Image (tube, rainbow, N blue to C red; front, side, top):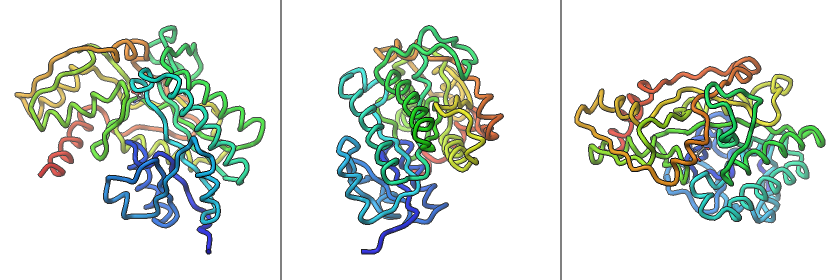
Length: 320
Ligand code: AKB
């Protein structure tokens, strides 16, 4: 059997970020060289049909080893994780999946001489003791969700593998991600995606966060660009080996509703905060990403209104 050399593996390829990142990587590296992997087959036809797909459960290292008879991987994007809200429902399992999954991938990468690994961190690494405005790269980190604790520990392990074993691991602390192609699963920032779908479907939205809850957010094209720019940066420019702060915009539920009302003046929003409010209240309101800007030239493109215009345009097209 001939092996595909220089392959790229995307674990968690069916998720919100993975489904879009896989397609971008296929545009750059060629469809056959980007292997999408997840615990279930992709629902999205484009993802299913455009290139190879493999069932991989990151908690089963043998699934990764089995792939080595057919692929020689040069890069791995390990995106599989349990997010903040879902993590609180089953903390022990979230810890196991987020941490053991990361170890399995890092160890596989070392053993099989993978050149680069990407692993996402999150603003969830911050907590109630962290300065909430313009949160610095290096500051107090006292996360109080299992997701945040696992991301903070994961950051330390990524840096450890880089320093002790020379593994080129790169990472970004994503804010809430918003895109029209796939739904997020189980996060505290998910409302900012759902609100667009509900605006078009019902003209009204019941928000699980209160109206003035300000959180850092980013539109998917910016998140994809940041991820690829970081991965393509020369190694010597990647000076932060835990995870880079990354920012684009910050807004409240009331502000995103106002942005939607520019297109749909009758759109209305109500507020019924649930357990996710407490998580949101422990996170920063805005992020200082000057290290990413200085080290490898990060600069976002979309603000709230530009994102709203684009989201609504695409969702209307998809719905028709
Ligand atoms: C979540 O809300 O859990 C995620 C995140 C900010 O990492 N979107």
